[in-house]
Image 1 (cartoon, rainbow, N blue to C red):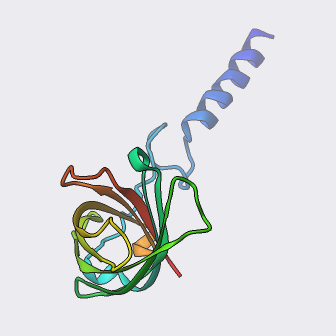
Image 2 (cartoon, one colour):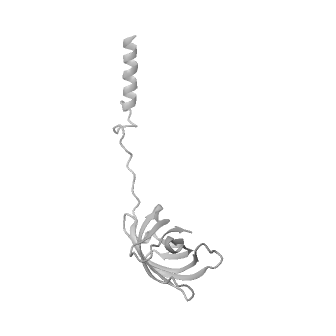
Image 3 (spheres, rainbow, N blue to C red):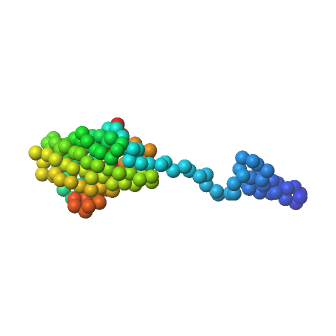
Length: 154
């Protein structure tokens, strides 16, 4: 009976270690390498939904912006909402520039203009791309107002 138990234990260990199997030639616990997506400024091209918010003044902004794949942002329009008042949107035009490196990290400079809103000017952002350029997260990097947000390809 002990020999039978030892034989069963040997088979169980061999199966766990992948002995004799060409399908599992790696060692136990070796992760399968994942190919990282290579990004560039050209990864961002098309029209994106943009969302920005700033908690300190209860600002929420929603709109669209177009990236040309060469580092330019244009045709941006935002509706800014203050203090949760979604009935009184303030229209803002947005233009700018951006860069993205091979790891998907980059920067964006957004220029906000409006004849109706107090929140205008130029803001610098750190950018992190995801999903082959379909989305990105934005965090203000110039420490002016604390804006953060996201881009999502339409």
